[in-house]
Image 1 (cartoon, rainbow, N blue to C red):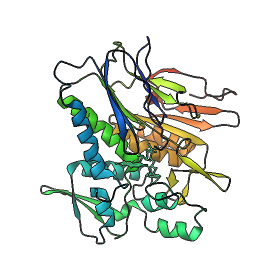
Image 2: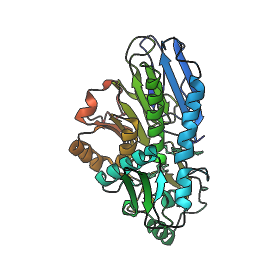
Image 3: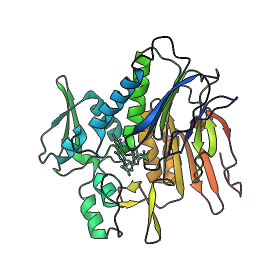
Image 4: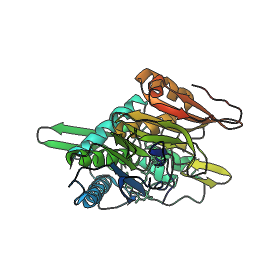
Length: 359
Ligand code: FAD
């Protein structure tokens, strides 16, 4: 299992809590919750229900598994027989039919991609693979500029088009070897889909997480709002920097402190700047976004990570986003949150030894 920024679920008298920034399912709460959890998409999922109505649990675990399999079958680039892999390997440029679900995700990707000035770019796949993330193996040496330029020539949102009419939806590329990587959005989409599945069954008190994306609704088993914690960027599995009440929204965290490797004395992050073609190196280590859906939050967090703290703050303010950033300082961490984020905060820890803590 890879390391991810995720969400933690903690119990206690004060209520349940889920943490953004963990790579394993957090402990069960021991309360009156129904929990389904397991592995999916190279990470973990967890569905927690508080006092589920009678009868709704029959076959629920199977439905959850089927929904996750369906998303995986559509969105994965780690398997060859998925809808997305077939599109990537299709040698032509004719429009290819896709589901309404895939169209929705690509629409979100193109919109957020444009708003981040191409920092979030789902065609970044060749660079992700070149740097040893994605399905390809880790490189043994740093890619050289020629390899980076070759990969960059295959990257750009302008090469990807979504066509929608009353007959359906199609995805079209104008470069035959364009490679679309929806990894950054897949967890958010899957989280929303699980929440929708619960809603269809009349379930209104739930906390759902897939990797670093979470959605909650209603009250926890303790009868208080579900509490979601943002992971402090440390190696400790459970180390909350701040705790929020999602108020029925989605949250997602992207970070550079868990999914990386060391090569030739340098830390290589899985977040790639499409402009330079290289992994990010700046001081922003984690970006958390709360939005109406986990998909939306999952799209923005990666774009903000690419932009770095200063540009991310400016964009969050310009777009009115609920954003929480953690940056590395000489002696610890500094945090920043947009005005929109403040209304979700329940508590937060001091960020660093030098108390370089800004709000
Ligand atoms: P996020 O910050 O949400 O996204 C970062 C990821 O997005 C990077 O790892 C890269 O893939 C991509 N990316 C990097 N830079 C950019 C950029 N500038 N713009 C857009 N995207 C960028 N992993 C496995 O190991 N095995 C699997 O079998 C597997 N299956 C998966 C199936 C699906 C359907 C999906 C969606 C993902 C799968 N993954 C798998 C990948 C993995 O679980 C994570 O989704 C992925 O690594 C990103 O999650 P994150 O939250 O860590 O990072």
